[in-house]
Image (cartoon, rainbow, N blue to C red; front, side, top):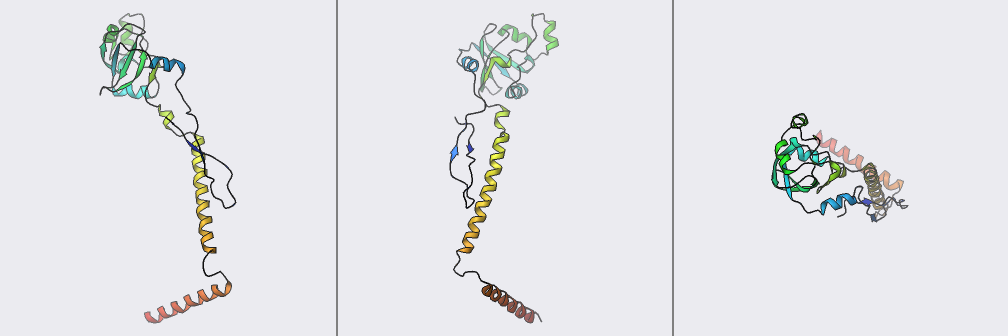
Length: 201
């Protein structure tokens, strides 16, 4: 899937028109080898996240027990598990730091409460380096400064192109421009204005 495309920034022609041609850049972020490996692992269970944890997941933050509402299946520590939202949609895969039994004890609990359980650890359920999610990050969805600059240049070039075409159409009109025609045109307007003023009287 092509995530980014930018219009080629080349020199303008003499008429000010934008040269045709589009180049496609590689995505700024692509899954690393570890992420691809995690995605291919066989999952033994899954955890269900609340909306707050899903937002944290989109920002590539650690996944803590406070955001987990349920656990499905049986698995041990360091097992690959599915990460799902409350609608049942699968969001990604991760390597868990806790077993399914331990997660049932610590879900919806803060770090200080987990320490009191004396499990030997109180960190996140899944580290961000050990998860591979299936949707783009919020930073990836934002246009880069380079893309904004190219878009601005493209709009300027399009305006210049429209102006050049409008000026060309005026020069190609059937009646060539001359001061005689210009004076005659103004004289006709003055006569029309005088007639309008007489009608008003």
